[in-house]
Image 1 (tube, rainbow, N blue to C red):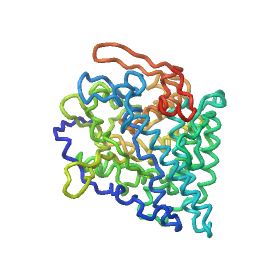
Image 2 (cartoon, helix red, strand yellow):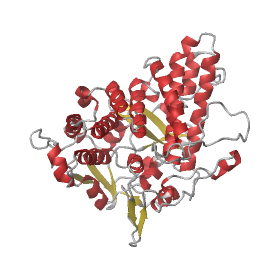
Image 3 (cartoon, one colour):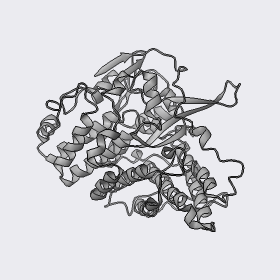
Image 4 (cartoon, rainbow, N blue to C red):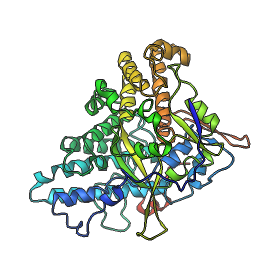
Amino acid sequence: MQRKALYILLAILPSVTGCKKYLDQQPDSTWTQLDTPEKVSQLLGTAYPQANYMTFCEAMSDNVADKGTGVDVRTNRDPFYFNDVQNINQDSPEYYWAAAYTAIAAANNALIACENATDTAAYSRQKGEALVARAYAHFMLVNIFSKSYDATTANTDMGIPYVTEPEEVVFKQYDRKTVAYVYDQIEKDLLAGLPLIRDDKYKVPKYHFNQKAAYAFAARFYLYKRDYQKVITYADMAFPTSQAVSYLRPWNTSYVFLSPLELFNIYSNSSENANFLLVETNSSYGRNLAQYRFGMNFPMYRAIMGSNVTGGDWCFPAYTYGTADYFIPKLSEYFVKESVNATIGYIYTMVPLFTAEEVLFNRAEANAQLGNTSAVLADLNTYASTRITNYDAGTDVVTLAKCKSYYGLSDNKNALLNAVLDFKRAEFVQEGTRWFDLMRYKVPVTHVTSQGQTMILGADDPRRVFQIPLSTKTSGLPLNPR
């Protein structure tokens, strides 16, 4: 473990190298005339939710503590108290909802252009991206604003509207239908779009659904749907186990020698091999994540990073602003001025939507569910070889016996699953990912305030599902129960 004190002003930010998507994605003045594949591709640059789910998802999880002081905003406070977020601006659930449906509208308009083209074959790449992007936005919506997929209840659990046509009226009536229906539509779009995805024709493929990103999405989709053999199939298409090391971030080698600003620069950079899909988000999360009142302090850092099943130490460097604001240098803001001489502008956080690390964990989890012990251990040991300080393959090896002993479990599957989810928790701390795993496995969450009040979010508590925007009632949508 490493703890390093870092007292720097938030205004001192990494350069925007690798974060030029703000300029790259803007459609030109004729984008409404979608009469070339290139123009459709420009439109598809906006077919990804340009909003950040990390603030409210991380604050709802078991990765945060009440520091008693710090940046105190509703998007961070309300989820910690398991309350509906009373904020509609950036980094709120409502803001994400709107951004996701805006992205879906862009995908739908792109699909219309592809279908109406004289030479439809020339638009096949764009059609594939539009279908997969539409599936992704709906997938995120259903996993934030509905219950996690459960085959025994999915046909009755309330879903979200699956929108396949551009809106032509102000208040169109929608139906939430069911989680099962939404998953069926996601799968339909995903499977139709996957064969059409190509990596060429884009200046920066990682700002679009390239092949690796699409396979990574498919692996995540089928993991959440609990179709584990398909998880393995698509994860192997992203990269086989034998090539995993070449895709994982080199945290315990070259990353060790980087400064915090250098780490900020590389983590969400398109040049980083581990990043499969990136999106810029209108978000101040990168600026505030370390200093939120409800976040990672030293005891929480120790709980997440203090030990692991290998017996070795995690190499992730921990820094602090002051004494209680702990963070791993990964996500930071970049600032775009309104004009060359302006002092005001827009705050963005570049977010990796799909990474090699997630693909590896998804494959390991699927193999654990299927009882493929050796395959799970192969991926966990590959991961450990890039994350343990002074890694020694002889002493830091992950074995089934170690997993069972470390977690005090006799069941092979559960011991391996615990190891996978703990590794994943450490890897993606402060990125909101933990919340989706807690949802999928219906793990209760306990939060304790700085005054000692204990709050428990039970496995079946309806507050686990984020509330949809109140304004959607004009479209006939029932709110989530409370």
